[in-house]
Image 1: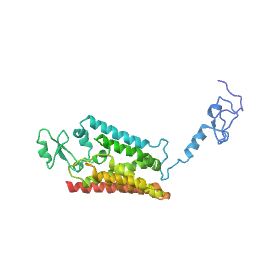
Image 2: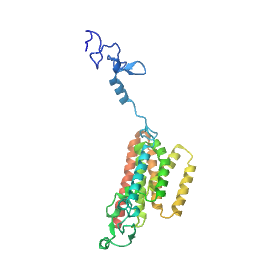
Image 3: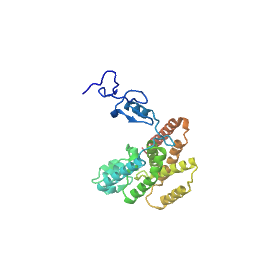
Image 4: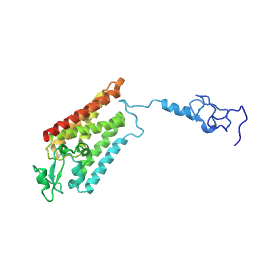
Length: 306
Protein backbone atom coordinates (compact mmCIF):
# COMPACT_ATOMS: atom_id res chain seq x y z
CA UNK A 1 0.00 0.00 0.00
CA UNK A 2 1.38 3.43 -0.95
CA UNK A 3 0.66 6.61 0.97
CA UNK A 4 -0.36 9.65 -1.12
CA UNK A 5 1.89 12.72 -0.79
CA UNK A 6 1.07 15.18 1.96
CA UNK A 7 -1.56 17.72 0.88
CA UNK A 8 -3.05 15.50 -1.85
CA UNK A 9 -6.80 14.85 -1.24
CA UNK A 10 -7.75 11.24 -0.51
CA UNK A 11 -11.10 9.44 -0.52
CA UNK A 12 -12.95 9.95 2.74
CA UNK A 13 -13.64 6.21 2.88
CA UNK A 14 -10.32 4.95 1.54
CA UNK A 15 -7.50 7.07 2.94
CA UNK A 16 -4.88 5.37 0.77
CA UNK A 17 -6.49 6.43 -2.51
CA UNK A 18 -5.68 9.75 -4.14
CA UNK A 19 -8.61 11.51 -5.78
CA UNK A 20 -9.54 14.90 -7.15
CA UNK A 21 -13.28 14.16 -7.45
CA UNK A 22 -15.64 15.50 -4.81
CA UNK A 23 -19.25 14.64 -3.92
CA UNK A 24 -21.66 17.15 -5.40
CA UNK A 25 -23.63 17.33 -2.13
CA UNK A 26 -21.14 17.22 0.75
CA UNK A 27 -17.96 17.99 -1.27
CA UNK A 28 -15.98 15.20 0.37
CA UNK A 29 -13.34 13.54 -1.82
CA UNK A 30 -14.46 10.22 -3.31
CA UNK A 31 -12.56 7.58 -5.25
CA UNK A 32 -13.97 5.74 -8.31
CA UNK A 33 -15.27 2.88 -6.11
CA UNK A 34 -17.30 5.34 -4.03
CA UNK A 35 -18.70 7.40 -6.90
CA UNK A 36 -22.47 7.14 -7.39
CA UNK A 37 -23.78 8.74 -10.55
CA UNK A 38 -26.28 11.54 -9.87
CA UNK A 39 -28.30 13.91 -12.04
CA UNK A 40 -25.30 16.24 -12.03
CA UNK A 41 -21.85 14.79 -11.34
CA UNK A 42 -21.26 12.15 -8.67
CA UNK A 43 -22.30 11.69 -5.05
CA UNK A 44 -20.83 9.66 -2.20
CA UNK A 45 -22.62 6.55 -0.83
CA UNK A 46 -23.69 8.35 2.36
CA UNK A 47 -25.40 11.19 0.47
CA UNK A 48 -27.12 8.74 -1.87
CA UNK A 49 -28.48 6.77 1.11
CA UNK A 50 -29.65 9.95 2.82
CA UNK A 51 -31.39 11.07 -0.34
CA UNK A 52 -33.26 7.78 -0.62
CA UNK A 53 -34.48 8.08 2.97
CA UNK A 54 -35.78 11.59 2.37
CA UNK A 55 -37.71 10.70 -0.79
CA UNK A 56 -41.41 10.38 -0.03
CA UNK A 57 -42.84 6.94 -0.73
CA UNK A 58 -45.41 6.82 -3.52
CA UNK A 59 -48.96 6.20 -2.30
CA UNK A 60 -52.17 4.95 -3.84
CA UNK A 61 -55.17 7.22 -4.18
CA UNK A 62 -56.40 6.02 -0.76
CA UNK A 63 -53.18 6.15 1.23
CA UNK A 64 -51.67 2.70 0.72
CA UNK A 65 -48.14 2.02 -0.45
CA UNK A 66 -47.77 1.22 -4.12
CA UNK A 67 -46.66 -2.38 -4.52
CA UNK A 68 -43.84 -3.36 -6.84
CA UNK A 69 -45.63 -6.69 -7.36
CA UNK A 70 -49.36 -6.10 -7.86
CA UNK A 71 -51.64 -8.94 -6.77
CA UNK A 72 -49.20 -10.60 -4.38
CA UNK A 73 -51.69 -10.56 -1.46
CA UNK A 74 -54.41 -12.06 -3.65
CA UNK A 75 -52.03 -14.80 -4.79
CA UNK A 76 -51.12 -15.54 -1.15
CA UNK A 77 -54.80 -15.78 -0.20
CA UNK A 78 -55.47 -18.15 -3.08
CA UNK A 79 -52.50 -20.26 -2.00
CA UNK A 80 -53.79 -20.55 1.58
CA UNK A 81 -57.24 -21.62 0.37
CA UNK A 82 -55.77 -24.25 -1.95
CA UNK A 83 -53.48 -25.67 0.76
CA UNK A 84 -56.35 -25.95 3.27
CA UNK A 85 -58.58 -27.60 0.64
CA UNK A 86 -55.89 -30.14 -0.23
CA UNK A 87 -55.36 -30.99 3.45
CA UNK A 88 -59.10 -31.53 3.99
CA UNK A 89 -59.44 -33.66 0.87
CA UNK A 90 -56.50 -35.81 1.98
CA UNK A 91 -57.89 -36.32 5.47
CA UNK A 92 -61.49 -37.33 4.84
CA UNK A 93 -63.46 -34.47 3.23
CA UNK A 94 -66.55 -33.75 5.36
CA UNK A 95 -65.44 -36.33 7.90
CA UNK A 96 -62.01 -34.73 8.23
CA UNK A 97 -61.00 -33.59 11.69
CA UNK A 98 -59.56 -30.49 10.04
CA UNK A 99 -62.97 -29.75 8.50
CA UNK A 100 -64.61 -30.09 11.92
CA UNK A 101 -62.10 -27.67 13.42
CA UNK A 102 -62.28 -25.09 10.63
CA UNK A 103 -65.95 -25.09 9.56
CA UNK A 104 -68.20 -22.46 11.15
CA UNK A 105 -70.74 -24.11 13.45
CA UNK A 106 -72.80 -21.73 15.63
CA UNK A 107 -73.21 -24.43 18.31
CA UNK A 108 -71.60 -27.78 19.03
CA UNK A 109 -73.00 -31.00 17.60
CA UNK A 110 -72.56 -34.76 17.79
CA UNK A 111 -70.89 -35.98 14.60
CA UNK A 112 -69.97 -39.25 12.97
CA UNK A 113 -66.73 -39.84 11.13
CA UNK A 114 -68.49 -39.68 7.75
CA UNK A 115 -69.65 -36.09 8.32
CA UNK A 116 -73.18 -36.94 9.47
CA UNK A 117 -74.49 -35.57 12.74
CA UNK A 118 -77.24 -36.15 15.28
CA UNK A 119 -79.45 -33.10 15.73
CA UNK A 120 -80.64 -32.14 19.21
CA UNK A 121 -78.23 -34.54 20.94
CA UNK A 122 -76.35 -32.99 23.86
CA UNK A 123 -72.65 -33.45 24.61
CA UNK A 124 -73.09 -35.95 27.44
CA UNK A 125 -75.27 -38.27 25.36
CA UNK A 126 -72.91 -37.98 22.41
CA UNK A 127 -69.86 -38.93 24.43
CA UNK A 128 -71.67 -41.98 25.76
CA UNK A 129 -71.79 -43.39 22.23
CA UNK A 130 -69.12 -45.56 20.67
CA UNK A 131 -68.43 -43.92 17.31
CA UNK A 132 -69.76 -40.37 17.40
CA UNK A 133 -67.78 -37.46 18.83
CA UNK A 134 -68.73 -34.01 20.06
CA UNK A 135 -67.50 -31.11 17.90
CA UNK A 136 -67.47 -27.64 19.43
CA UNK A 137 -69.04 -24.64 17.74
CA UNK A 138 -68.38 -20.91 18.09
CA UNK A 139 -70.68 -20.60 21.11
CA UNK A 140 -68.64 -23.34 22.84
CA UNK A 141 -65.47 -21.28 22.49
CA UNK A 142 -64.30 -22.19 18.97
CA UNK A 143 -64.09 -18.52 17.98
CA UNK A 144 -61.39 -19.25 15.41
CA UNK A 145 -64.05 -20.79 13.18
CA UNK A 146 -65.26 -17.28 12.32
CA UNK A 147 -61.92 -16.81 10.53
CA UNK A 148 -60.87 -20.31 9.46
CA UNK A 149 -64.17 -21.02 7.74
CA UNK A 150 -63.23 -18.26 5.26
CA UNK A 151 -60.34 -20.41 4.02
CA UNK A 152 -62.15 -23.76 4.03
CA UNK A 153 -63.68 -25.55 1.03
CA UNK A 154 -64.55 -29.14 0.24
CA UNK A 155 -66.18 -29.25 -3.19
CA UNK A 156 -63.75 -28.45 -6.04
CA UNK A 157 -66.31 -26.29 -7.86
CA UNK A 158 -66.80 -24.19 -4.72
CA UNK A 159 -63.08 -23.59 -4.38
CA UNK A 160 -62.65 -22.96 -8.11
CA UNK A 161 -65.44 -20.41 -8.35
CA UNK A 162 -64.30 -18.46 -5.31
CA UNK A 163 -60.63 -18.44 -6.31
CA UNK A 164 -61.46 -17.37 -9.86
CA UNK A 165 -63.48 -14.47 -8.48
CA UNK A 166 -60.64 -13.58 -6.09
CA UNK A 167 -58.16 -13.65 -8.98
CA UNK A 168 -60.36 -11.32 -11.05
CA UNK A 169 -61.46 -8.88 -8.34
CA UNK A 170 -58.61 -8.93 -5.84
CA UNK A 171 -55.68 -7.41 -7.79
CA UNK A 172 -57.83 -4.44 -8.84
CA UNK A 173 -58.60 -3.50 -5.25
CA UNK A 174 -55.10 -4.37 -4.10
CA UNK A 175 -53.70 -1.86 -6.61
CA UNK A 176 -56.22 0.82 -5.62
CA UNK A 177 -55.96 0.42 -1.85
CA UNK A 178 -52.48 -0.94 -1.21
CA UNK A 179 -51.63 -4.28 0.38
CA UNK A 180 -52.49 -3.52 4.01
CA UNK A 181 -55.83 -1.85 3.37
CA UNK A 182 -56.81 -4.51 0.85
CA UNK A 183 -56.02 -7.31 3.29
CA UNK A 184 -58.04 -5.53 5.99
CA UNK A 185 -60.96 -5.23 3.56
CA UNK A 186 -60.81 -8.92 2.66
CA UNK A 187 -60.56 -10.25 6.21
CA UNK A 188 -63.12 -7.89 7.74
CA UNK A 189 -65.61 -8.55 4.92
CA UNK A 190 -65.24 -12.26 5.51
CA UNK A 191 -65.72 -11.78 9.25
CA UNK A 192 -68.91 -9.77 8.68
CA UNK A 193 -70.17 -12.67 6.58
CA UNK A 194 -69.20 -15.14 9.32
CA UNK A 195 -70.98 -13.11 12.00
CA UNK A 196 -74.09 -12.99 9.80
CA UNK A 197 -73.93 -16.79 9.51
CA UNK A 198 -73.46 -17.05 13.28
CA UNK A 199 -76.65 -15.07 13.85
CA UNK A 200 -78.90 -16.25 11.05
CA UNK A 201 -78.04 -19.87 10.20
CA UNK A 202 -79.11 -23.05 11.97
CA UNK A 203 -77.41 -23.65 15.29
CA UNK A 204 -75.94 -27.04 14.33
CA UNK A 205 -75.29 -26.27 10.68
CA UNK A 206 -71.77 -25.90 9.30
CA UNK A 207 -70.72 -23.23 6.82
CA UNK A 208 -67.48 -22.93 4.86
CA UNK A 209 -66.11 -20.91 1.98
CA UNK A 210 -64.54 -17.61 1.00
CA UNK A 211 -67.80 -16.36 -0.49
CA UNK A 212 -68.42 -13.77 2.24
CA UNK A 213 -65.05 -12.15 1.55
CA UNK A 214 -65.58 -12.41 -2.22
CA UNK A 215 -68.95 -10.68 -1.98
CA UNK A 216 -67.20 -8.10 0.17
CA UNK A 217 -64.82 -7.37 -2.71
CA UNK A 218 -67.83 -6.95 -5.01
CA UNK A 219 -69.44 -4.47 -2.64
CA UNK A 220 -66.15 -2.61 -2.27
CA UNK A 221 -65.72 -2.26 -6.03
CA UNK A 222 -69.20 -0.77 -6.31
CA UNK A 223 -68.35 1.84 -3.66
CA UNK A 224 -65.02 2.66 -5.32
CA UNK A 225 -66.73 2.94 -8.69
CA UNK A 226 -69.31 5.34 -7.32
CA UNK A 227 -66.57 7.37 -5.61
CA UNK A 228 -64.65 7.93 -8.84
CA UNK A 229 -67.77 8.35 -10.97
CA UNK A 230 -67.20 5.15 -12.94
CA UNK A 231 -69.72 2.92 -14.68
CA UNK A 232 -70.69 0.18 -12.23
CA UNK A 233 -73.55 -1.24 -14.28
CA UNK A 234 -71.68 -4.37 -15.39
CA UNK A 235 -70.56 -5.03 -11.82
CA UNK A 236 -74.13 -4.65 -10.55
CA UNK A 237 -75.28 -7.14 -13.19
CA UNK A 238 -72.62 -9.61 -12.00
CA UNK A 239 -73.70 -9.13 -8.39
CA UNK A 240 -77.32 -9.64 -9.43
CA UNK A 241 -76.45 -12.93 -11.16
CA UNK A 242 -74.66 -14.11 -8.02
CA UNK A 243 -77.63 -13.14 -5.85
CA UNK A 244 -79.91 -15.23 -8.09
CA UNK A 245 -77.50 -18.17 -7.85
CA UNK A 246 -77.44 -17.75 -4.07
CA UNK A 247 -81.15 -18.51 -3.89
CA UNK A 248 -81.35 -21.11 -6.68
CA UNK A 249 -78.40 -23.37 -5.90
CA UNK A 250 -78.62 -25.75 -2.97
CA UNK A 251 -76.42 -25.52 0.13
CA UNK A 252 -75.45 -21.89 -0.49
CA UNK A 253 -75.16 -19.57 2.49
CA UNK A 254 -77.18 -16.46 1.71
CA UNK A 255 -76.29 -15.20 5.18
CA UNK A 256 -72.58 -15.15 4.42
CA UNK A 257 -73.09 -13.67 0.95
CA UNK A 258 -75.25 -10.76 2.03
CA UNK A 259 -73.24 -10.16 5.18
CA UNK A 260 -70.03 -9.99 3.18
CA UNK A 261 -71.58 -7.75 0.51
CA UNK A 262 -72.83 -5.19 3.01
CA UNK A 263 -69.67 -5.44 5.08
CA UNK A 264 -67.41 -4.90 2.08
CA UNK A 265 -69.40 -1.84 1.01
CA UNK A 266 -69.21 -0.33 4.52
CA UNK A 267 -65.48 -1.04 4.89
CA UNK A 268 -64.72 0.40 1.44
CA UNK A 269 -66.70 3.53 2.31
CA UNK A 270 -64.47 4.02 5.36
CA UNK A 271 -61.35 3.63 3.22
CA UNK A 272 -62.24 5.73 0.18
CA UNK A 273 -64.28 8.56 1.75
CA UNK A 274 -61.81 9.32 4.56
CA UNK A 275 -60.71 12.99 4.29
CA UNK A 276 -57.27 13.38 2.77
CA UNK A 277 -55.94 15.60 5.58
CA UNK A 278 -56.30 12.90 8.25
CA UNK A 279 -56.93 9.88 6.06
CA UNK A 280 -54.97 7.20 7.92
CA UNK A 281 -56.36 8.14 11.34
CA UNK A 282 -59.95 8.08 10.06
CA UNK A 283 -59.41 4.81 8.22
CA UNK A 284 -57.87 3.06 11.21
CA UNK A 285 -60.56 4.41 13.56
CA UNK A 286 -63.32 3.28 11.19
CA UNK A 287 -61.91 -0.22 10.78
CA UNK A 288 -61.40 -0.58 14.52
CA UNK A 289 -64.99 0.53 15.11
CA UNK A 290 -66.26 -2.13 12.70
CA UNK A 291 -64.12 -4.71 14.48
CA UNK A 292 -65.55 -3.69 17.86
CA UNK A 293 -69.11 -3.96 16.52
CA UNK A 294 -68.36 -7.45 15.20
CA UNK A 295 -66.92 -8.52 18.55
CA UNK A 296 -69.99 -7.17 20.36
CA UNK A 297 -72.28 -9.03 17.95
CA UNK A 298 -70.39 -12.29 18.58
CA UNK A 299 -70.62 -11.85 22.36
CA UNK A 300 -74.34 -11.08 22.21
CA UNK A 301 -75.09 -14.05 19.98
CA UNK A 302 -73.04 -16.36 22.20
CA UNK A 303 -75.07 -15.28 25.21
CA UNK A 304 -78.28 -16.23 23.41
CA UNK A 305 -76.95 -19.71 22.57
CA UNK A 306 -75.52 -20.63 25.96
